[in-house]
Length: 153
Image 1: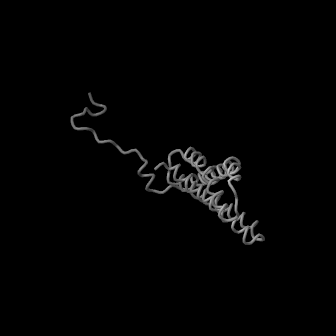
Image 2: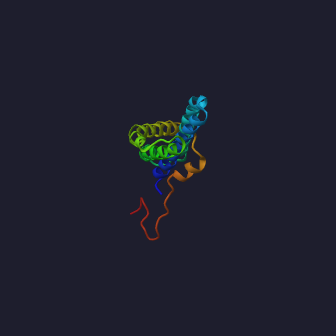
Image 3: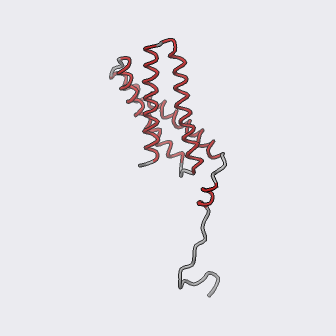
């Protein structure tokens, strides 16, 4: 499966679940709703930063494009999951889907891209594991039997 699809799917589900959770807290305990939003927002950001750092540290090819595509998947998915989840909690109707698929999806996509970009920068600055350095080094090729040796005529 494509790496960007996996990242976008899970972060979209996470953000949609966070929207549902904050709506549930707001319904059952309105005084705790504002602090819960900040904690939930921080959770999504931390997951994006950690996953982006892990990708850069492991040496993922083209992490910027991977996370861009992941954000394009995560945005609309989080909007749909958030509206469906909130409809179970606070009777949000289908009229919320339009704004969730436009402004909400754009916010989620930006959140995923920025947090992953920060994580990618952090991961690239970390020292790389020794195994990847050895596997990335070019290996000398053994000459084929019967092939002329380089430097001889």
